[in-house]
Amino acid sequence: MERVLQRVAIPSNGGLRGLVDIVGFPQTAEQMTAIGGMCERAEKDELAAVRQRYGWTEDAKLVAGWSPHDDYMLAGRVYAHIARYIKARTVILIGNAHWSEAFGVRGKLIFDDFERWRGPYAPVRVSSARAEILAHLPASSQTVSRPIMETEHSLEALIPFLQYYNRDVEIVPILVPFMPWNDLHARAAELSQALAAVMAAHRWTLGQDVAVFVSGDGQHYGDYGWSYYNYHPSGCDGVGYVKATELDQRLVSSYLAGAVSSDKLKGLFSELVNQEDIDQYKVTWCGRFAVPFGVQFAGLLTEAVEHRTLTGYPLREGTSLSFPWLPLESMKLGLTGDANLHHFVTYQAVGFK
Image (cartoon, rainbow, N blue to C red; front, side, top):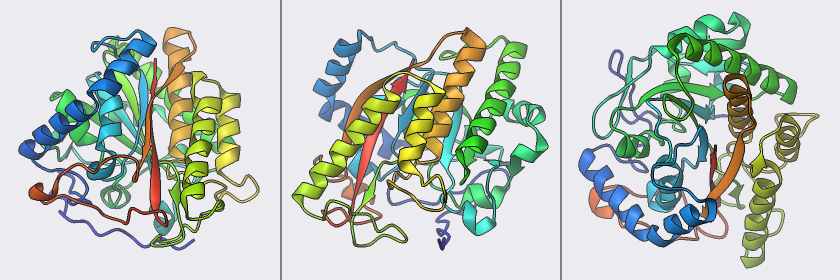
């Protein structure tokens, strides 16, 4: 599949990473404070329902979470359901590597060498844990690439909401390119072992000191306006839309809700990716590599550090057509793609404790 690189809107400056998307995501404190307030008000009842369903309080801390990375105008309500519970000082960000194929990278975890990333309230520091993790990982399983990281939007999307809820957050950004299940499982195991060793050395705990935050949209559905997706198995009408949302609900309830296990995640991966040819998707989840990897990594890390099984909790779902759009035009924010029955994206927020 051909990959055409995204243009960087704000170039990197020394150790400060630039920005790819200044249309879909906010860049200033004023913007993010307004957006956070909009989402809190719009989702007040849904947020309360989640707390009641799981017996949580606002002080609940997640070990891991899955968030969308689409435009805030469309998906902001869903981000708010998951970012609020990611409260650790150091957050391991796991994202898809949309453009790694253009750089010829497969099968290796992709790190960067930036010192800070841009955030709406202040630059976000990259944790010193990154160097420690890299020191514990096999050289053959990792690569450090500033060019790949600075042309990828999937992780920069999470930072404004993370910083809205936690001004002191530090990050370790990691991208997951194309890889078969056996490699994905091996990289997850290696990363969990590396981070467990770092946590033991610092006496860090999960949820409080370290959390995992996975970036990935669901289906990219439709027959119009996609760069390389052409996925509309049930038609581009109301029936197709309903079937697409039902598919996501089944995948989440079958593979991500409840006890996390390698068998379940392998099952999810096999439903998303053609096992005979990983270049071919079966379902166009944007996070078809990052989500199974990130949850597998978080599950293995929890087993290593706390000797227990991680549990998944569906928090919110939606699509680029399911909510009233947030009124962000006055902030000069908007849409980076179409939103109609011929071109829509599905979203999920899933927390793991």
